[in-house]
Image (tube, rainbow, N blue to C red; front, top):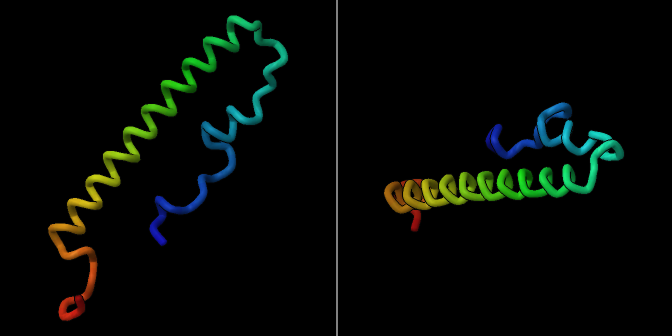
Length: 71
Protein backbone atom coordinates (compact mmCIF):
# COMPACT_ATOMS: atom_id res chain seq x y z
CA UNK A 1 0.00 0.00 0.00
CA UNK A 2 1.35 3.42 -0.98
CA UNK A 3 1.64 6.17 1.59
CA UNK A 4 -0.91 8.16 -0.45
CA UNK A 5 -3.48 5.39 0.16
CA UNK A 6 -3.21 5.64 3.94
CA UNK A 7 -5.79 7.59 5.96
CA UNK A 8 -4.87 11.19 6.69
CA UNK A 9 -3.54 11.95 10.12
CA UNK A 10 -5.89 13.48 12.65
CA UNK A 11 -5.66 17.25 12.64
CA UNK A 12 -5.43 17.72 8.87
CA UNK A 13 -7.61 20.36 7.20
CA UNK A 14 -10.59 18.04 6.60
CA UNK A 15 -10.54 16.85 10.21
CA UNK A 16 -10.38 20.44 11.47
CA UNK A 17 -13.36 21.39 9.30
CA UNK A 18 -15.34 18.44 10.61
CA UNK A 19 -14.70 19.48 14.21
CA UNK A 20 -15.55 23.16 13.75
CA UNK A 21 -18.62 24.40 15.62
CA UNK A 22 -21.07 25.84 13.11
CA UNK A 23 -23.49 27.38 15.61
CA UNK A 24 -22.06 30.89 15.24
CA UNK A 25 -22.52 30.99 11.44
CA UNK A 26 -25.46 32.83 9.86
CA UNK A 27 -27.50 31.24 7.09
CA UNK A 28 -25.68 33.43 4.55
CA UNK A 29 -22.29 32.39 5.95
CA UNK A 30 -23.32 28.73 5.84
CA UNK A 31 -24.42 29.10 2.20
CA UNK A 32 -21.07 30.72 1.35
CA UNK A 33 -19.24 27.94 3.18
CA UNK A 34 -21.19 25.29 1.25
CA UNK A 35 -20.25 26.92 -2.06
CA UNK A 36 -16.61 27.07 -1.00
CA UNK A 37 -16.63 23.41 0.05
CA UNK A 38 -18.34 22.37 -3.20
CA UNK A 39 -15.61 24.17 -5.14
CA UNK A 40 -12.97 22.38 -3.07
CA UNK A 41 -14.67 19.02 -3.71
CA UNK A 42 -14.59 19.74 -7.46
CA UNK A 43 -10.89 20.64 -7.22
CA UNK A 44 -10.07 17.43 -5.34
CA UNK A 45 -12.13 15.33 -7.77
CA UNK A 46 -10.30 16.91 -10.73
CA UNK A 47 -6.96 16.15 -9.10
CA UNK A 48 -8.04 12.58 -8.41
CA UNK A 49 -9.19 12.12 -12.00
CA UNK A 50 -5.91 13.55 -13.31
CA UNK A 51 -3.94 11.16 -11.08
CA UNK A 52 -6.09 8.25 -12.25
CA UNK A 53 -5.52 9.14 -15.90
CA UNK A 54 -1.80 9.40 -15.21
CA UNK A 55 -1.79 5.93 -13.65
CA UNK A 56 -3.75 4.47 -16.58
CA UNK A 57 -1.27 6.00 -19.02
CA UNK A 58 1.65 4.59 -17.04
CA UNK A 59 -0.01 1.16 -16.91
CA UNK A 60 -0.55 1.25 -20.66
CA UNK A 61 3.05 2.29 -21.26
CA UNK A 62 4.62 -0.19 -18.87
CA UNK A 63 2.22 -3.10 -19.32
CA UNK A 64 -0.04 -2.60 -16.32
CA UNK A 65 2.59 -3.47 -13.74
CA UNK A 66 2.65 -7.17 -14.59
CA UNK A 67 6.04 -8.86 -14.21
CA UNK A 68 7.81 -9.72 -17.47
CA UNK A 69 6.69 -13.02 -18.91
CA UNK A 70 3.17 -12.91 -17.43
CA UNK A 71 0.24 -11.95 -19.53
